[in-house]
Amino acid sequence: MTLVQTASAPAVSARATGPAALAAAGLSARYGRIEVCRDISFEVAPGEFLILLGANGAGKSSLLGALAGIVASAGTVTVGGRRIDGVSPQRRAHAGLALVPEGRGNLFGPLTVDENLDLGLRHLRSDERAGMRADLNRLFPVLAERGRQAAAMLSGGEQQMLALALAIARRPTVLLLDEPSQGLAPVVLDEIVAAVNRLRTFGMALIIAEQNVRFAAALGDRFIALRGGEVVDEGHPSELANHSGTAARLLGAAPH
Ligand SMILES: Nc1ncnc2c1ncn2[C@@H]1O[C@H](COP(=O)(O)OP(=O)(O)OP(=O)(O)O)[C@@H](O)[C@H]1O
Image (tube, rainbow, N blue to C red):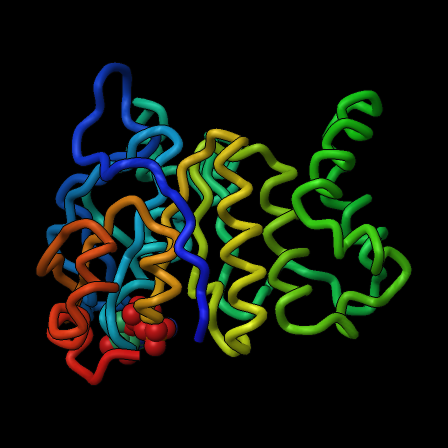
């Protein structure tokens, strides 16, 4: 795998001023009576890209689901300083959270790329719509080329880019990405890394659940590692790229 190491912003562990883009405190997540994440506290600064690193079953998707309000949770969550825990997923979306689930679940497969984007942009005023469409075409040129193709017929990487574009069209404060690398070939991962890094010009914060260490290291400003539903470590992604032992210890497996 030949992921390009892009120049990323320095690690941010504390904000200079103003509220965090997102802050979670004492957050837990459960399915019925089974608690799968416990006492998780972290902050993401505006514009920061935070990697949630963990092996299969570590609790990454559950934590993203707890933030988005689709998995039962306790604890507090703020977006831009406003409490959003306890409100519906729709109200959390209005407050500035957007989730791109694993498997690109927010696409309408039978509709074309253009039709998906028209639907995704319909909440905008017509003058804003043209500007957003131009921004999305700049971010993801391949989507402009594939406009008339059914979303279901796109490659995995192209579907991931369409899912990202639809989430960005909501202009979220914080974008939650669940394993964007999953099922993609190394050469496609390079394109996704480049596309996600282009999002830096939008100023939104990203929380990216990942277990692909090189992908995470090419994208993140900081990582927190989950194991058994708890935060067990945090650091700068370069530690993952430069010390394969660290990655192996955190993932409980051989490094990628
Ligand atoms: N719908 C569910 N009902 C019950 N338990 C679940 C459900 N979804 C996940 N779990 C359990 O919650 C724990 C955390 O799973 P989760 O999917 O959040 O992990 P993950 O880190 O995202 O892993 P993966 O990378 O495999 O998706 C696991 O023990 C899993 O079996």
